[in-house]
Image 1 (cartoon, rainbow, N blue to C red):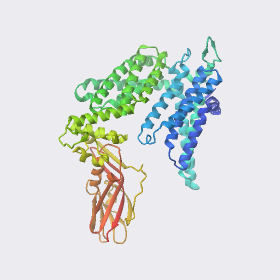
Image 2: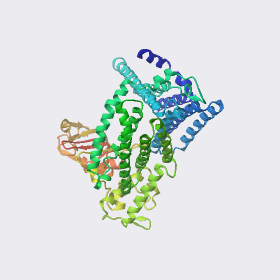
Image 3: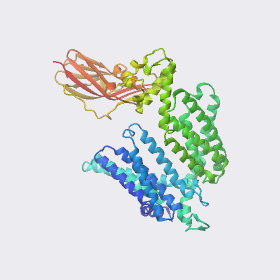
Image 4: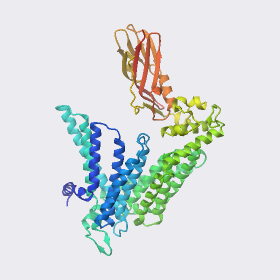
Length: 599
């Protein structure tokens, strides 16, 4: 069968996914319809419905492979599907209403779906003397890559056709572009991918008898392609080897001092570990000297790297406590260490043992009171309380101001308060005022402004961004305003500095970019300046509340008011950006300007 015939056969065989995974496909159709409804008319609770459906899809996939692999009784198979549906419904009702906004639901759902999908791939290899986990992983990886490629090409093609019709004939609403992508990725791509997966019950061993073993299925599913073989053996593995040498040399040269707590390598080491595990599973399907060398040597290097990274993360916890992200870094470190030991000292056929380890650690991270968010909440509360107590700022369950606090303790207090604010735990701190607003009241309560690690804030390459938080849906009262203008201001746009915007016959708006921060100048008809608004004050106010690279700020934090005897001008920013490097500095603001004329 040549490539063209194979492609046509695969496309015509998409219906097999509906026969093999009927409940999963039904939930995927419901997910597609939910997305369609939200595209047409956004509705409250959309995120929670999507989370419940995603969990249901992953659970029914696992149930399908459990039934296919181990259960012959139809009643038990049906009961397993019913259980998966009830569990997904239960998960939906357990979602707190504000979880989606604070990323808690996204993290939990992501961890569960990822774990269930890995379990879905692993189940056919359990007690299977013919194929191992790394072979099923290869099949899933290969077919996922093919599916994504086809879906991406189809999406680009359909979008190009719609764009052409929109340009040449008549306007097409943007929603139709979203609808087509929704159908392609959630109906076509998923059904095509599932139709490619080998049917495990056809070639597993039942007692001592092989049931309908199909050589064609095995060869197509578990044979590594020539392209992937060359890519892994002659490109990816050599690049990993060079990268590993660089990492080891850097570690050897900087093993002492603050190197353990500067957090410089942690993201790189985590990425390196993930890639190493993926490449090991793929390289297990290759029988050549390069792949064999990689499987023998690099898992042992993985153990060293993981130990180093985990120790650095634990030391960092001593300084800034546990966040849910760092909790998962530690959990991933434990998983990677066990994976390294399995890969190093057991044959590749036992590589599937990493999956039950992943399942156990994932369940631990989601089970109160040892789950990521509960542990992080307690850690940050304890860190804040202990730091305040050590500095004599906590007396009779009330915070007292103190400016003479060390830089590190100021950073600890700021970091803990921000974390607790972000996850809506501030109100649980009895020693803070009941009406405490983090970014407005911090200095007034603690006696010093919010303080950050200077290595993160005052860098030669420095990026700051803040946007207006519109999640509250509040309506602005503009009944007293006479004029409204929307402005996009950039300090490097020379042409803008000479352009005047006419408000009426008496007033003009002029943007001045001569200084570091732009100024908005309201002038009369002869060009005389009546009121100047220096945006430096707005930038400093916003970034004092949030000096990190991203932030959602309140309306008060993004508002600047200026007035004189004739005018009141209110600037409300919805995006502020400041980007500095060694060569240039870019400052931009997207603002609403409200002008009120005094009588």
